[in-house]
Image 1 (tube, helix red, strand yellow):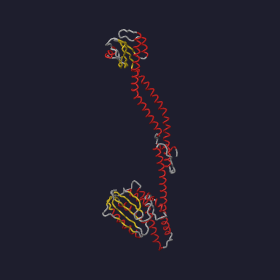
Image 2 (cartoon, one colour):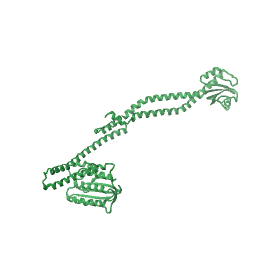
Image 3 (spheres, helix red, strand yellow):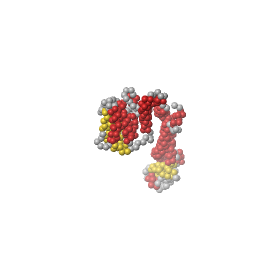
Image 4 (cartoon, one colour):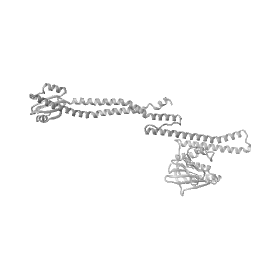
Length: 462
């Protein structure tokens, strides 16, 4: 199998491995984005809580430091410079408030009154156009310290945490891509083997066998391809046997026609034998014509343009007409022909010519295998969905294996050639195809008379 054939068959499509890696990478990237979007508010909320806790501890330490220094500020002054510089290093701004009603950035008048009354205040507000965290602690009577820190500091911290998480996820993705590629290649190895096996079968190989491996679904593909290979081998073997059988059957009358025609052309045939010889030529030509007609019918039945002409048909009358013809032929072979008819007319909508063709093929098949003194039964009856045509005989019958292949072209012919009288191997195949073409079905089995039974189910309307 050439690589060009494989590449041309792909049609430029991406392989499963590529699609798997791309899809998993896209899913992972989407997961990273979603994780970032979901994590940011959670991380920010956690950071705000931690920042409030840190600012509250810093406020408590500031109060302790002011009490130890016995600091006595003036009216609403900032913190002492050394303490203010220490807090500024943490991006914190501090105030000392002593008077009720004083305006403090980020705090409402009510919050100012609460802290001056000795109640600690934890809040968030806006100072100089910036969102800030506020922690206020009372120092003494009508005195409090206020610490404020911009919320943006918390946001920067949250973004930094998210950035680190995203970087870690991206690194994990970069590591996972080659691992995913290797895993996908290993997973699709049985599929590539199945593809190669299918291509080999398409090129005529029939000894292809795959070892089921991988996940159950992929292993099932290997099992199905093995069954397909076996079925193709059996089918093609039957086709070869059928063609050999048909060619043999065609060659026999052709040889006779050619031989007698040459004899007559060369004047070898005496004058008194010319008429008999001509009749033999005509008989063999008619036999050849029947073979060709059966082959053409069988080919047309498998084509999309196979046509039927359904009309209202009385099957009872159709069987009666067939019985008139086949009773004479059966009598010549010392075979009794019986007819089982319904009590009243049995009318369905079907193609009467095809239905008669079915009946004639079954009757001819039964007469061929029926020995002298045996019985053939032509039967018709109604059923729940339409009607049944049935031909039974008291001949050698069919085995269970024969029943399963009875309507396959040439199988029974090849199996019993030289063992019992056989025809071309086309008659029963035509019956099966015609029954399907009329919307019905055909089946074979054992007859109560001891031989074979062939039953054709026809629907009420084709």
